[in-house]
Image (cartoon, rainbow, N blue to C red; front, side, top):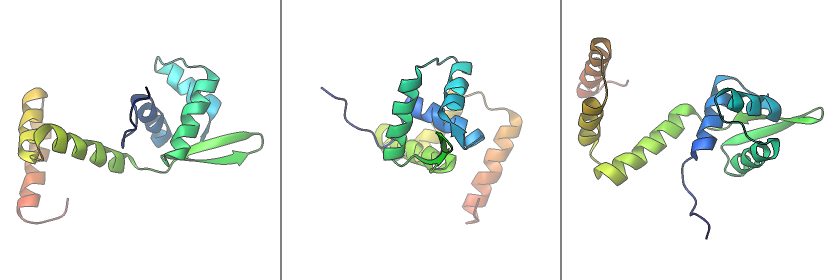
Length: 131
């Protein structure tokens, strides 16, 4: 039985998006090479299939150039991040941003500079300023 669809990119789709957010548009062969460089050596046909699925999901757009297709993201890193994090906040933490932040701070090594940046952000939010 097929696994139900997700509203978020799969691990491989996210890996491809990260490659394309750094540099795009790219042809299939360059995406495949970048995946191999990251330790994920996939068959050319597997990469094409995944890219075509991502086009159908509207994560990517493709344009024909000569005899190859070039792929680039239709979605932003911020948009995907917010959607995935929002899902975790809702499903795991019952919508509590406070619980997410406390868990994140307990589970991560946050250095002094990062804490200062977090405090500045919280202070701006408390004053009603935009980030």
